[in-house]
Image 1 (cartoon, rainbow, N blue to C red):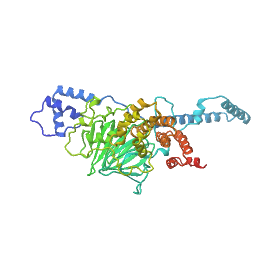
Image 2 (cartoon, helix red, strand yellow):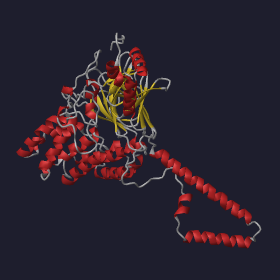
Image 3 (cartoon, rainbow, N blue to C red):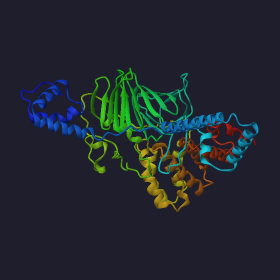
Image 4 (tube, rainbow, N blue to C red):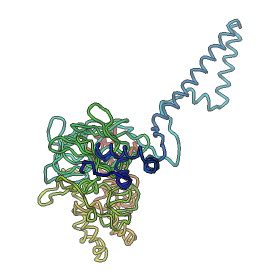
Length: 526
């Protein structure tokens, strides 16, 4: 933008610059000219104040986490218990002159009364936990409550997975202190702690540094990475460290890019992101629809590269898909795209930029000789084989109906869009037992690309119920256990783990279950 002052600056120029001033996108010289004008023009000053109030919106109080509320409540209970104990000691001091027999008799009577008369107050005071679980049917609580949840998983794509010593990991499931790298022709999709969906673009280096009940921390050295985090109350915050900034969020869809010079750019598609400098000072609160350049401290509109690299993470959390045909979700703020879902596609996104940008990509898998995933993965290669050979196990009508779904699922560029096709297929052929494996495919789809573990578990149970002797029934039982574990339902995960170990004591996934629940190793004793 040309920052030279025009020869005349009047009300028309002022009204054109108003939104840019409030959005902090106007150069300093032009902004100074703007404020000089409104100080002397009452009409433009009133228009500025009205627009400022519209942009500010209502003051929304910051949301307190369920953990802090629970701890505050537990502290109140402990305080009441201590006060009651003080009153009890004071009461005993006033009766020191009573005889020993009377005191003993009174104490015995009190104990008997407390034992025979039920009361909620005494139970609460004597059993004050540090976290109180509230049974609210309208609220779903998250959190990381068990070490079995602190794992990441490769959903698809190619890349290198290295441990803290720099050695390559052959498993598709990895712990913290893991480094993920892609070259210029690779990208891969991940799921961290069963909650955070990630798409690592080409030429990227990402390190998973830590994970706990309060925070999950990643380090991005270079490249373009997209994140989607549908955070529940009690879930940890997500922090991404780059060479020049810190990005901290509580739940949103956004991308972080570190170019070859080490400069950081943050783009937000849904929600809001806080960007901090190396000194932990807040540099900007980036809202949806904006791209923030940390080095230049400047804002611009999100572009095609950011939208494209985030598309594989765009399935809705419910069973209703909004991406049929590859459309950009209506919940994402993308300047220049119309509201009509029919036209919310990348082809209709016009990007105005003055510098070349890395082309966004979704994961591509080399299927020429070997699978891109490890041999002991959780069924991706087996499922591809299952879909390719579907014509050997179905009637001609079912085979033709599933052809389009097979095409979408087998291509890494469109696999994230196959869920709607599979759902339509199930609606049309749900009564045929030969179509049962569609439930397995859609369950994996909901689990990997939407993070909807409950819907995935329902689909896995339907598959096992309708085809208990199917060759991939073992995979369905393993996926059912994995979904319960990543969801955080630890007791159900242990129950499902025992069921798997009893049904498949020499199964393909025994090691995965024992690694997360070592106490289940005794189930293999017989």
